Length: 546
Image (cartoon, rainbow, N blue to C red; front, side):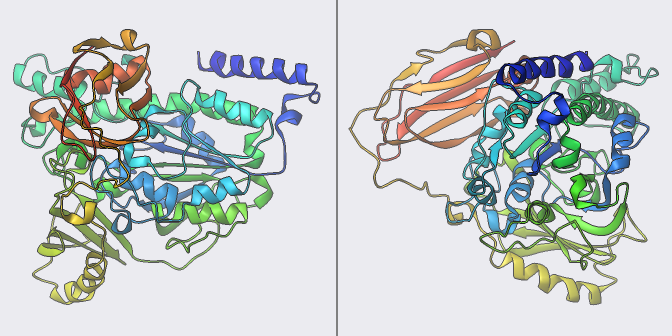
C-alpha cells in the first residue's frame, strides 16, 4: 500500500511534467541547486525506546544521517518545543505556557526571513493551525498530503521549508494489530487491569490519579507504546521511498526529532504535562532522538554519531547555517553542522501544559538546568523556588536519588544560573490573568448569533465533511472572544480564544484524527462575544460522534 501511494503521486506529477514539457527523467526534473528543509517531529518519542529493533526501516535510512545521542527537548509538552524548533526561542522567552497562548508579534520570525529569501513555508495539518502556533510564519494548506505538497513545490523547483508532526505516538496508545508484538495479550483474567489498559487505548489524556496504574501494567504499557513506534516506522518507510525517488536526498536538509519524551510509569503516570497535568523534566520526559540528513553538496560525513549535548534551540541555527543565511536577531543555540562548544541545557514547563485549568493564572512551573553530569530541577511558584532536586546523571541516570542535601556545593553553583532565567521569564498576559483587549474593536451593543452551526446538535466527521469551522454574526473587522468547554472528568478542558473576524476555521481533520482525539471529549459548549462587549451569544452545544 505504501509503495502504491507514493508511486501514484509521482505518476500524477510526472504526467503534469510531461504536459509542461520538462526534461526526460523524474530525477532530472526534480534536481535543482537551491536547498530545501523538511522538519519531521514525532509526538512523545523517547530516545531510549527508539531502537533498530522497533524501527528497522528508519534506522536503515539513518545510516546516511548524523545521530545526535544527547539531545533534549526544552519543555515537557508540545507547543513550547515546536515553537523553539521553529523560532529558536526558549520557553523562558516565549510566554507560551498553556492553550490559547502564542508568541508576541514583537519577535523577529525566522520563517519570515526564509520567506523573504524566496522559500515556500508550509504544513498540511489542521494541528498546525492551533492558536499556540500563530505568529510563527507557518502557512497551513489543508486538503493536501505530505507527499503531494512537497511534490508540487519540487516540480515547480521552488525551494521550501516544510514541517510535519506525526501524531500517532500520542495517547491513546492504540496501534493497529499488525504493529503489536505477536505475544501481546490484554489482561483478560483481571477486570481491573483490563480497564486500566483499555483506558490507555481509548483516552487521549489520562490525568494523574484518575487511573491507578500498577507495576503489573508496565509490560502492557510498553507493548502498546512500542506498537506505536512500529507504526511510525512503517509511515516513515513510505515517506523515505518518496524522499529518495523525488531526488530530495541531494538538495534537502531533513531533520527528524520529537517534540518531547513520555513518562511510562517511572513516576506513576503515563503521558506528559498536557495529558497528566503533572508534568516533569526528568530524563524520560526530555531525552529524545535527533537525526539529520545533510544535503549532499555540504559534504558532511554520513552515519556520524555525535555525543555532545544538543537541544531544540540548535535546530533553527542549523537551518540558517546550512542555507547560508543570517538571522535578524541572534540565536541562542548553536549550529549542528560542525564542532561547537558544549553549553548548559535549560528547560521550563508548566505542570499542566495545554491542560492548565486557567491559562492566564498559572503559578506552578518546573525549571531545570544540566551542567556536565549534574542536573538541578526546581519547582516554582511563579519565580519563587519552593523545592530543589539534584541528580548525578552519570551515577544515577534514572534520577532516583536526590542529592540536593548532600551536595549543597553543586546547588550553590547551579541555582544562580537558573534563577537568572526565572527572573525574566515571560508570563502569559503579564501574569495578571486579565483579558487583553483590542481598543479598535467595534461595539455595536448586540450579541453575536451562531451562523454555523446555527443550533446545538450532534456532529460527526461526515456531517462536517472533515472540516471544523465555526461562524457567527457580527462585524468582520472586530475581534471576538470564543469561549469553550469540552469533556468531563479527566478530559475536562476549557478556555478562551481571541479570533479576528466572525469565523474560526480549525482546518481539515482526517477521520482517524477526529475519532481518536476529538470524539473522546463527547460534548463541547461554545459561546462568543466581541472583545469590547460583555453580551455573549447563545450557548452552542455540540455532541461529538463518530
